[in-house]
Image (cartoon, rainbow, N blue to C red; front, top):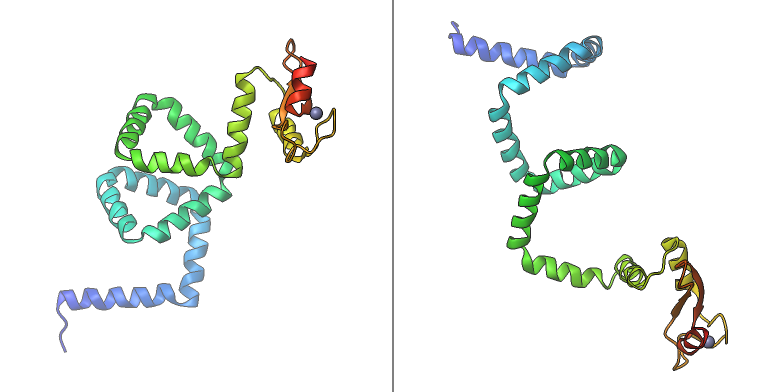
Length: 198
Ligand SMILES: [Zn+2]
C-alpha cells in the first residue's frame, strides 16, 4: 500500500499524539518543560507578539462559547490572586484614566435601568445600610473609626443615658451624640436625651 504525502503526515501526527499521551511521553514533556522554563516563556512571549491578532480573535471566540466556564475561572483566579489583581487594576486605571472614564460613561449610558435597580437593591443589603448610615454621620461632622462606631451602633439596644428601649420608645431613633468641636463620637442616645445634652 502506497501512502500519499498527506496520509503519511496524518499517520505521523497520530503517532506523535499517542506518544504525547502515553505515560513515558507525558513524563518527558514535563521534564522538558521544567528544564526549559525560561526559554519556553520567552518563546511564548515572542509567539504572542507575532500573532497578537490571531490570538485575540481566537480568545474572543472561545470566551463567547464558554461564558459560564470563563466566568467561574476568572472568579477563582481573582479570589486566589486578590492583592495582586487589585494592584494591577489600580495601575491600569492610573495609566488609562481617560479610556476608563469613557468606558464607564458609555456603560452608565447603556445600563441606566440596571444601575438604578442595583442601587435600590444595594440599599437593602447590610453593606448598603452601613454605608448609608456612615455617610449620614460624615455629613453632620462625626469623625471617628467608623467601623468600630458602626458596630457599637448596631448592637446598642438601649439609650446610654435614660436606658429606654431604642426599638420601642417613641422618642427613640438612635442619635449619635458627638463632641461638636473634635467630631468624636460619645454616646448613642434616644432623641430626647440627645436634644437635652446639646
Ligand atoms: Zn434617652
